[in-house]
Length: 381
Image (tube, one colour):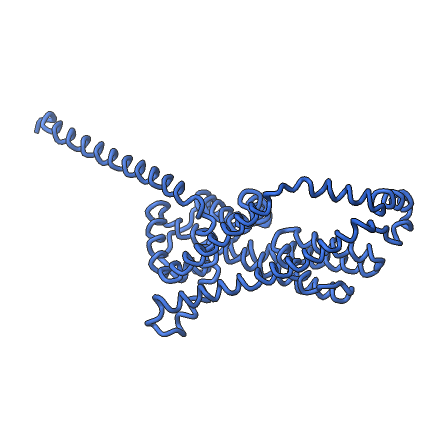
């Protein structure tokens, strides 16, 4: 057979391949353009979607257990609605209590500052007894803070930097946050209701894009969320409770709010130190030197154990991340995304480390896990 007879067939094959390649490029370009357009449209609501996703992943094992005990007919509406409302109450009640306490304490603070405008701020008795610098500090305090006129001028300079429209801006920000919170709960309801179907589609997408390693990457990211919630939030709250006992023994006022603030700050690395160091300085200012040293020393021990042993084990162990990358992910995430970065940072680090291991240390392919196994983390992967 003459080779020239094969030329039309080869030409048709080349043209067909070129057409398929052009179609593939067009689809990728269209998908990228629509993705960018969608992100631009949803830009203001991306934090709400991210928070809802994190909460759904973190609570999915508990929700899956509730599905077993709940009537099957209520799985589409009643169960996700009850779960969403319960989560909303768990988040709203502490925030409402904190807002009430803050409003009450702010009123007391304004009354106290109003009195100081007429009397000045007296120097503490222990200040002059500080070795070396006590006498100069006491003299500066009396000339700048104890004198009513000087202290009044200081307050005026401090509050002059606060514009009159700050209250309006704060109110608008509060309304915006409440709207985002509502969209977070709405998104959470649909994630609970359609979580299984969404997981199946995400598994198919990960396989088509990344191949068998896509499941491992997704599993490590989900494990990072579980580990971060346990290692940061729960351990932080436990730190607040434990350090709160030292507050009570030291005789600090408002122990419960102080312990709650310490627990919230403890979710951020090195954040608890701000709380117990502040409590220590307050005790030192009122003359309770021994109690101040005890509170600070106990807080340092608790934070050292939590940050160097408990958290690396919970976060890094769940997502198979080295401690250095856990710490960098948390701190970098906070800097880039604020509070949301506490969870996004370790998740991104887990995905990067998982891809690095798959590309440098290939592992055999695995079978497709059940969606609930994927949502529970990488233990089944």
